[in-house]
Length: 293
Image 1 (cartoon, rainbow, N blue to C red):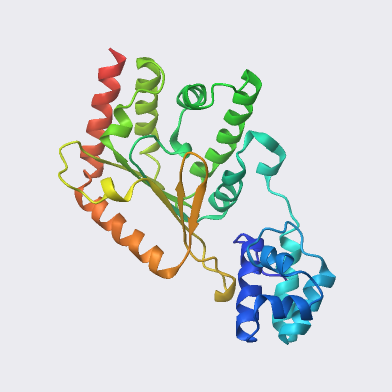
Image 2: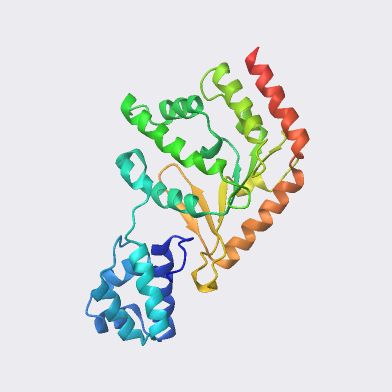
C-alpha cells in the first residue's frame, strides 16, 4: 500500500535527489552528465522547480546514484504524488507566484505559528479587512480580481475548522497590528470581534504583545511564519519545518536546522512578553468596542 500523503511530495522528492547525489559524491555537473541532462535541469529538479518529473528522468538518476529497489519505489511514489494538483492551482493569477508554495505548505501543515508586527495573518482576516488590504496595496486590481482573492482566502481558512488534533494555529500579534486601520472603524471592529470568535476554537491561540512591552526581540526579528508538518510513519518522508518571511517583492523560505532553531528561540522570547490568553482577549475586545462606538 502506498504511504498516506501528508507532506508536499515535490519538495520531498527534490530534497531526496539532492541528498542522493551528495551521498554518491557527485557534483551537479557530473551527475547531470551521467544522467544525460543539463546541469540547469538537475538544479531545477533539486530545487523543486519542476512541476512534473518524467519517469525516464527519475529512472536515469536512480541508476546514476545506485538507488536500491525499496528507496526507488518511494521516489517513484513521490513523483506520482507530485503530479496531483492542489485546489489553489485553479485560481491562476489570483495568487502571487511567491505565495503558491506558501499556500501549498499551509495546506499540509499540522501546526503554524504566525508572528505579525503590522498586519493580521491571512487565516484570521475577515473579507472586509482583506478587501481593504487589496485596495490599499494593489489598487490596480479589478473588482473581479479582488473577489478571486477573497475566494482563495475563504478556501484557505477552511483549515481553521479542522480538529486541533489535525491542525493548530498559534498567532502572536503586536498590538500595533490590531490597531492599524485597514478600512473604516466598522471594518476594524468587525475584524477584532472575529478574532474573539476564532479564539474560542480549541486549535487556535491568539496572543498579543502590548505596546508597553520594552525592547523585545520581535521588533528586530520582524514578521514570520513557522510551519511544522505531520510525522510520517517513515521518518524520511516527514517534511522538515519551514520558516516563511515575506517582503514587498517576494519571500524567503528558510529550512536549515540552525535557522529553524533561531526562529524557535525567537518564538519563545516573543511568547515571554506576550499577554496571556485572557488578557489578550480583553485587549482585543477593548479595541473592538473603541472602533465600534
